[in-house]
Length: 119
Image (cartoon, rainbow, N blue to C red; front, side, top):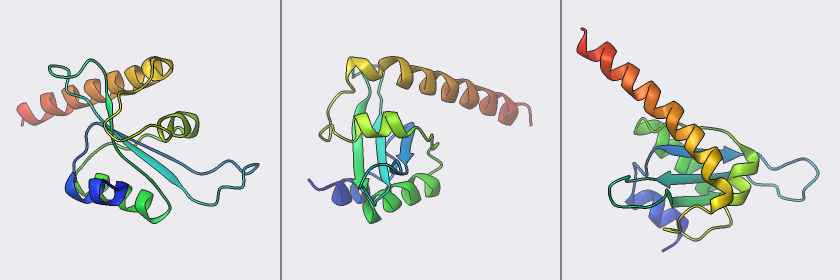
């Protein structure tokens, strides 16, 4: 399945979107976005839900914004994860970075739930 089709089919890919602008010293001229999905009950690690460059990356980011999916910018992590196939588990080298992002988002979501419950 192409990244574009995957992004359109799965408008709420998960917890983390990782966009990056290409480093100035590289020839790449397109932005990269990677979406991760994690189901702690079913999966041993987060998976790549969507990935794309250029217009596909912009579409992934637009879908994330439309669906309230948090966006985290980390060019190095995006470059690593952008090399993976769709539905691939993240590599061990990315565990710590992704875990820190997920922990932050889970804390924020818990705070949001507490605020909504108190209203």
